[in-house]
Length: 261
View 1 (spheres, rainbow, N blue to C red):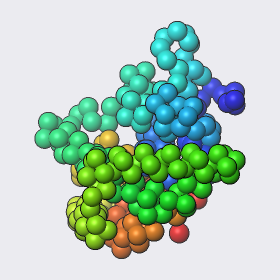
View 2 (cartoon, rainbow, N blue to C red; view 1 turned 180 degrees about the vertical axis):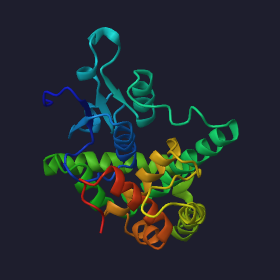
View 3 (cartoon, one colour; view 1 turned 60 degrees about the horizontal axis):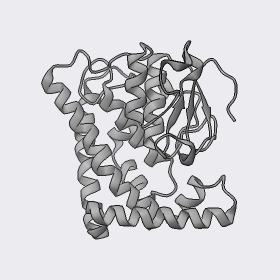
View 4 (cartoon, helix red, strand yellow; view 1 turned 90 degrees about the horizontal axis):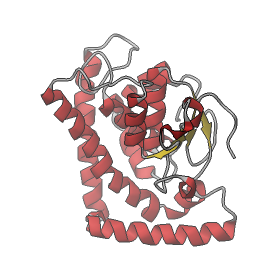
């Protein structure tokens, strides 16, 4: 059951209004909405209700004059953003980029969503399983949570083994995560040196964000607010430029949200 609203309805997996979620993909969509000035209403929902079996997903029906214009429930952060762009509700952040910049933007997103994501999945769902389970499945009765959590753990273990991350040692993963965050910190250090005090900076060095910034901000925040990624949280906090990058975006676009500690 959703609340009546003329805004886009964003299902985040758990409610916690006024707080970031632990999902980088939820924050990615929220950033794009706020940067575009698109009002939205948050609801809890859950993966089993989403069209792709995961969060985030959105209900577009409040924005559609004709309900037959296409599916009203839409999942996957990338496809959500693409659909809202096609409806004229979000700008094309990458529309004016040169081909080389588009490639750099895509590379940053792939680094985070197709590489770092799996390191974080192991840390959360394997190394700190109970903390992650009880947060992600907190709305379920405890006996159901145990069974569903077991199934998720088994599925992720199998996925990570096939993908390759499940075959690495903790030290190897730590080295790979550090390499990624160090590289991001190095480039953001340059951007911050060139910036006006207090203003957000963007990872490609342009005067406006690109899709890479929506993804990067989502990943930084997801680590800083998550209790199931303690090692990554400590690692990210050690990179001052990464944290300042996120703080500047928070101050501009999310002043109503509780900031990480």
